[in-house]
Image (cartoon, rainbow, N blue to C red):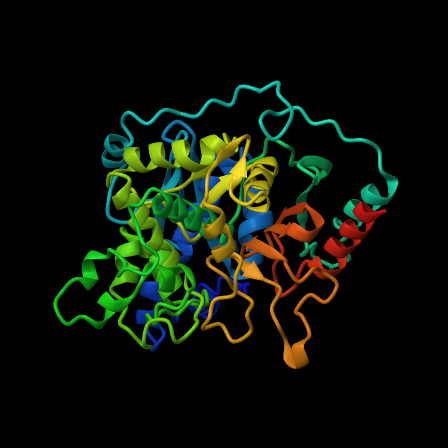
Length: 465
């Protein structure tokens, strides 16, 4: 499930542009929506410039403006010395995102740069020095010519939409543990960190899995969430399994519309997990499936607290237990002001590092000779959530859902498809029966979709020859 448009400020900005915003019933709504819209733009612009190393104009034109043509009224101020991007909207709202090397960008909501700098003290910037070993342990990649595979990958970049709305930026294909095909759009390359959006949820699940393996968490025990410990609170019955399966029962409005829980959490909250944890119970835990970015941030805060409760301890834990063993040296997991990773949305990594993550899942929790996750946990994350009627979701991973009359959502892809998926059709698609991982990164929007059923099936067919 994906929610394409960030529906921020469509009617609001138009009304204000006509000079009526504060003199109609839409006025109070504008007070809420405009800061959210500015926050969205500031966060993406900051990450695009400082984490992905792209030009501001390129990020605005290809990432931000497609979400709404009315965002053209935004004014962007990039201060490379201060490491900030500030976005103002018609002089009525302004938001700033602040970059910390190795940590990424954080939207300033209820804090300041000096406080965030103190929070980051002692956190080392990961090395980006080249590693001579063969991938996945190192950076050396040798790809044998394969015309059929090269043609299938090239076709995955085809885009006949008028505004280039499919916008594929990277494809990496891993087969039998090796990169066998790789292609990038102009302006992007093997060293470009790219935002995974909700693929971040799958990495958050892996962090939880390492804590389960260490005996610090239990799947079927009540989730350790402080807001739910008051005597008689029905949310105390929510288990870690319920959270991972998106079956907590919490009320949470996911679509990215003005005033929704997702936009309020991502673009107007100091503590995103704290925001999500205050939502009331709408269904008995474990009985109702509902996709929720708030759930992923609650999971991330659980890992944050178990790792020591500071940004420094969480960074160190993630590097030691997931990113380091997997060789994901490019990974930048951006935190909110509280110091918690935005586990729902804000992980950047190169396409090759996203592929390393997929290979770890494909190889049942091991990579580079190290076990990162128990095999039982890999089985769990790729098994259908009991409360999902379509059987298209596991535990922070997507599956090949069952449609009407037993047909599959992706009829040309294997039934054991298990994938991390992101908002703009970012995919780390894992095909155990084909010993293959396919990573697709891009910025598909405006209600278009990258046709993974067609393109991934063609890649798999080429590999089978």
